[in-house]
Length: 435
Image (tube, rainbow, N blue to C red; front, side, top):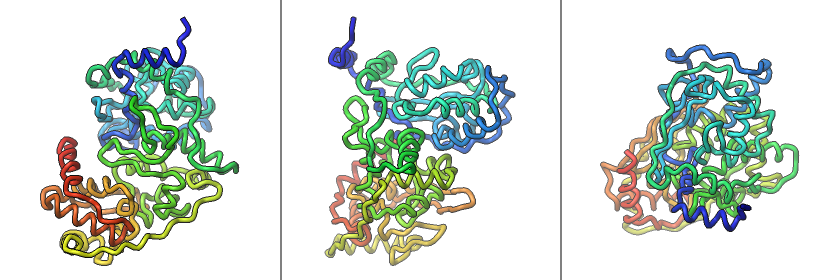
């Protein structure tokens, strides 16, 4: 029987949204902190792979695995490299990063290079369909040579006999067979471009951003069945506690980003517009800081386009009144010690509030969330550090946080003070369920 697109749609609907499990995004839901791969006492020597890999291929595979941010989902903070176990929480239940070491029982030691490529390209392993929590929707355009190089690298790592954890999903999302119909409906051969360009640098950037970096998985809105809204590529999305901002050319221009700023942010975790936090901290820590200069230039070129839009200056906002004054008093009392009375921040301690992307965003979600929750200390290797920011959920009430947010946005973000107490209350309640 021929399965047409309309018939597939009907079947998917009949499955009572079993395929909605695809809504779970790689790196876009609550994720336990991952660590850079390190040695482990539990590791055992890997069995020799079926085909010998040369040193150059393995070296390239290591670099590509970093560019693809494999460790973020496959290495826990206390576990062996690539042994899996990272919790990926979603509205539908919890996924766990799998063991991709060469262990033959729990890892990919019995896989061939063909099997690995099929998993990246089609989301299918030798024994099952993968949930789209693994971003094969982006990796689909990965070259066979790059897939083989990553596989060669992984097969040279230490085999670790760590069992995989089954996804703990609610019914009907635990019906894995529904993913087949989801793929029929939504798996595309390539993603649309968010920017305009045609240079060799732009084309390399497209591959790094759309494929290896799988940026669209977090930064693109989703439809009802979890599919990428490809009409709004990189326009931002809020699924986890910290939302992924708009990184389209227009979104970056509106937030005042330039190519050097982006390169600084992706390379060190810090830029004039702020520091990487939430899911993005792991991206910088485990992935983008290792990009070679040419690839970093390619990424920024693709994100902005061959002919970048000019960064927009802050819009002047006139604000006054009791709420503004109350927000200012709160800022002086609990924020100015680190961020400065003038909002200029302190190097290696706290970022500036002036023109900060989180403060400047039209959506105050992230600003409210970090004010409530705080931000862990950020250690970007030898390049940059930021001290811990405490959360104020227990010390400031909803009105105080709303007034503080409105003061910040109008004073240094070019946004009208429209944050309400109800917005703070809702995010406070959501935050309680995340801790």
